[in-house]
Image (cartoon, rainbow, N blue to C red; front, side):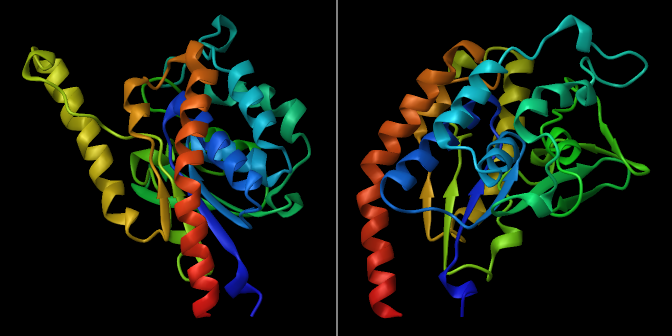
Length: 265
């Protein structure tokens, strides 16, 4: 019976746009809604881990803001594929997640990663926490793979940027927060082969998530976030404000749906 009362939330990847997840969580809390179960990829995995560890949404925003400049000379990769050594970024989590395991968290958490050697998707939900978080955000080409056991893991978004799977059928209400929307572009903006290929790649990325939007009872997807890039590190707080304003406008609709669901139960 207790399971039927649980609220789940799925947090997508999206680079620095992940700060908008903190905004959605803030608006939910402002309205007395606190998810019990979390599933996330990439930036969503980071936001989800911090929230599951007990940090408030404004503190999660601080984390994204303080660590937005990822290109640090001391972290450049040597003898590994990738510009930056992902495992060296474990230090940024020291003040935040030191000593935490999945079992020590205040909320159930599932982190999606891509097993690049075995060509499969995997979820971590037990044991050591920081390495799976780093792996889930290890964007290929920028970060080196993260080694856990015998395997290499990279960005969860490569195979699953909106990981609803661990929560399906296990909560009474599933909320989605998707921070990687795409906007219409004009022909003049696709004036090179590289730009066209990048656009196609982005749309492929989006299509793998779109069919799962309908699995959510309610979806937050601020279209204005399409104006921000994955590494727009100087616009973290602006992104948060965009997310907060959008979620504040949508939350009355969410509350009506949840109340109707309660009355029907």
